[in-house]
Image (cartoon, rainbow, N blue to C red; front, side, top):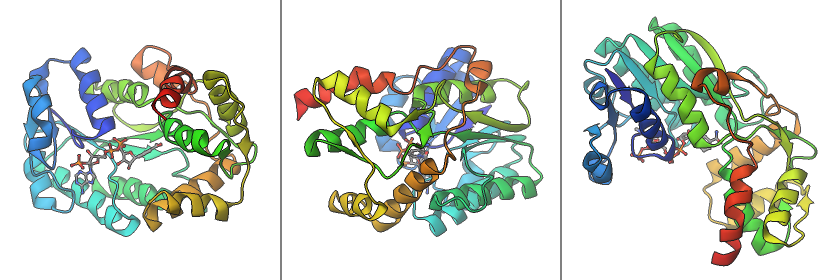
Length: 293
Ligand SMILES: NC(=O)c1ccc[n+]([C@@H]2O[C@H](COP(=O)([O-])OP(=O)(O)OC[C@H]3O[C@@H](n4cnc5c(N)ncnc54)[C@H](OP(=O)(O)O)[C@@H]3O)[C@@H](O)[C@H]2O)c1
C-alpha cells in the first residue's frame, strides 16, 4: 500500500490524480490534516487518513501503518518548524515499518551555500532519510511553472516583471508533470533508490517569462532585474510573512547564480512522456488573468 501525504495540497492532489491512472485505487491512500477539506476526494473514491500532522510523530506512525511506500511532501511552515516536522514524518514512517520513503526535495539541495533558505531544510531532511535506515528515493524538484502565474498577476498590475534574477534560468515544471514522475516512483519498485532530478524540458530566463507573458496578453511587460531589497519590499507589501519573503528572495538569488538552470530527462524517463515546456501554462492562462484583472 502507498500513502501520499499532503493529500489536500496542490501537489498531493496532482499525485493522487496521477496515481489513479497507474494503480488500483485500493492500493493507495491520501493522508490529510483536515478530513473535512478532503470531502471531494472521498466522493471521488479516494481513501483518506486524517489527523496527519507532521508536528506529531505518533500520529504520522498511525497514518503510515501498513504502508509499503510513503510519499512525504515537504511542508510549508517556517524553516526551523518545518525541519523538525519533516524529521517527525520520517520517524513516524520508520516506526510504522514503511519499506521505502519518497521525498520531494529541491534542485539545489546539495549546494551547501545556497542562498535559498528552504534549501537547508531539504538538505536536513535528505540527511535524516540517509540516517533513518529506511530505503528512500529523493525527487529534487525545480520551481513550479504555476508560480509564474502568481508573478504574472503582479506584473500585470505594475507593468513590469520585477525579479532580481539577472540572466539566471529555470527549467520550470508543472505540478502535473512532477506528479506524473512521482506517481511512477511510487507505483514501481524499479525505482527504489537514488536521487531523481525533476525539471521541465528547457531552462528559461525571466526575460523570456516576461516575453511569453507580453505575447500572451498583447502588452509589453519587460523583465525588471530589480534589487533584492525592492523585490522583498514588494512581497512584504503583498502580505507575505517574513520567512516566505526571505525564502523567495533567496530563491531568486539561487536562480541568478544558476542553481536552478539544470535540465534533466528524469520526468520523461519516469513518467514515460515528456513534460510540457514550463512557459506553456503561462501562455495558456495569462489571457484569463488579464480578463480577470
Ligand atoms: N518547487 C516549488 O516551486 C515549490 C513551490 C511551492 C511549494 N513547494 C513545496 O512543495 C510542497 C507542496 O507544494 P504545493 O503546491 O502542493 O503546496 P500546498 O498546496 O500549499 O500544499 C502543501 C501541503 O503540505 C501539507 N502540510 C503542510 N504542513 C504540514 C504538516 N505540518 N503536516 C502535514 N501536512 C502538512 C499541507 O497540508 P494541509 O492541506 O493540511 O494544509 C498541504 O497538503 C510545499 O509544501 C512546499 O514545501 C515547492
